[in-house]
Length: 372
Length: 173
Image (cartoon, rainbow over the protein chains, first blue to last red):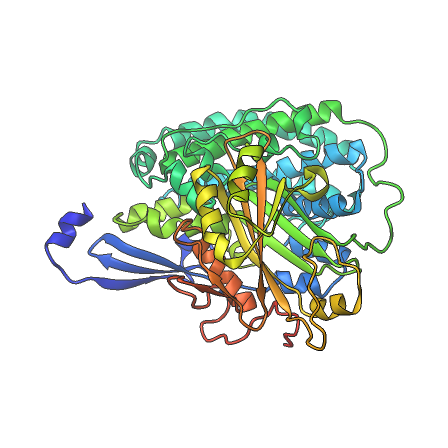
């Protein structure tokens, strides 16, 4: 289609999208070279909220960096807590008590659902439907209340500690979580009736915004983007960490490679996360939530260590280099949407602007995590 | 897989190639390469179906001087041949992370490449992995490492007129 537009030999123009634009969900700017309604080149311009977290990490103690991890992806902060806790525990050789592992899984999965719900609402909002956002926020609110009762915060969590957790849960959290599982399961059919089966939704997303598995590999795209391209890949299964191997859950995979596939992956993941939480609540062991003999001052042994977790948006990897002192020597944050967005320029070529915005929405961008 | 890959990478004659304990380190294979070998290695990994995870740098300022003083060699680092009278040159390291999504358990490979701090240059792998484009640009932002052949090394995360490299150990705000 863009060939047709180009063959008419018309002039091109540059369109500036963002950095303050509702469809970019944060301060992302995209420099679009347009041929009429068709995109010739879409160049993301990053860095508007770059805070240099990696340098901050070199200037504070190991434990002091934990709150920073909650400020990368503010919609799925607990996964980032988890990744950082894992890498330091790996370096220090700390074993986490069973109960803490289970609670980590429960809270991370709740956080993942909250993140997917917000994405769902915002994505449909991008496509012109306002109502689902309010439904999604209603459900998300319940999760935030649950997490607030145990972690003390609603967004930028700092709940994990090296060797365990800051706080144990109470019975209210357990019963509240069970009630929430029941509630969300009864709501999912509503979501599908209201949105998934909506003809406008289908027309906007089906066969639009194709991202092949090969493109994902070349750009390092992970998470629902990769799984929407037919690749059965999830760190929770491929490189099991914590106690994920003890649960029975599936990895939703769709082979259509379009925006609809990425939508369906996330919607199915909500159910799978509910399954994990349900099993974890059933099996939740008694015991301490903090390992004994974790040194007050962490000094990771010399060397470099890597750990990765499956965050709501894909693989969050973290590499630490330690010189044996009480501060990290180097701390590299590998954030999933940075890689997921890097394929946007190639994937959006020749698309209609409106379709490209749907594609951008389906990537589930969180800008603070890209800019770090 | 790991044995075949080791053979293929060894054919390029890298500085060292070590199998590591995943539980302790978080990756399976640690390869130290020279700048000239990096592109060929990326090509091999590409053929084997690896995905690029990240590219980053580490500034080892002060390490060469410390090694020159001490006779023993720190872990994970090449012994420096001492030339009397002349201090060894300070170094930086570029670290490439690759992973394979098709095998369970996941296979992770780290390629490290040491370059002189005074002339931080090595070839780009963005021709092999287009995803390396942004990672290398970011590494140039933070460390001033020049990836020769890279299509555009203008600041990505830093301001467009940035002439500083914040992750250098001698950077002062």
